Length: 328
Image (cartoon, rainbow, N blue to C red; front, side):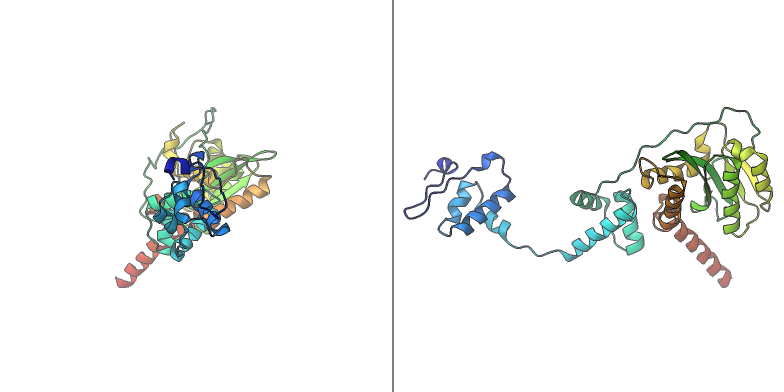
């Protein structure tokens, strides 16, 4: 029988049943053709596998290799399971770079970004990060402080420079507001507060939390933007209650002067916050706490920290200084 005719029908020898099937030009991929050949051969043992392979334009060696049971790569299955766990823990925000860093830091597994990307594609994992938001600045004239920080975002030790800022969070009834205090040494959040108004009580509350949780350090430089919630008497009094704390402010309308804090807000909104926001302020507060304590501080790797978490970075700093103190 000529091959071009065999593509349209299969005429068996005497004693065999007549079988008519569609041919490969119908858009059927090779895996489907292999499966179809196998099923036809199992249904009628008289059918020749050679003729079926010719009929479906499949090389016989490919057929036998395709139906061969392949051993399960247990290590690859474990790796994919771990990647999915990391991805889900990040609320589907972690990309290949973040997953590679967490695998290396937390599990000692070396993986290239290329392979991580391929495995994520194979598992259908797509990082869902939202677009950034442009912030409005106050137009009112008010008292400001000098920019003492001057974009020196790399202090030598913890509790030397703190930065603060406020952002808004969507809730069902409108908005609530988040104020944070960031220690620039390891980009660690040391204080935060959630309120229904972006006032001085909000910012002072975040500062007081930072001062208490960091065991009342002295001589800290606090940097913020020129918002009225940082120039008010209430907040200035809160600064005065912190031993030797000095106040620094960004230049008007220049968000880059407080870039690390802006970056934290961007990370929270793109990695954690649902696109539609939260039901109410209680749900928002709970989610913010989960992000800061349960993910940002202890799990999420930071490029600034050589892909270590803020907690691990500070831990290594204090352990090193403790050891040096003992040796000296």
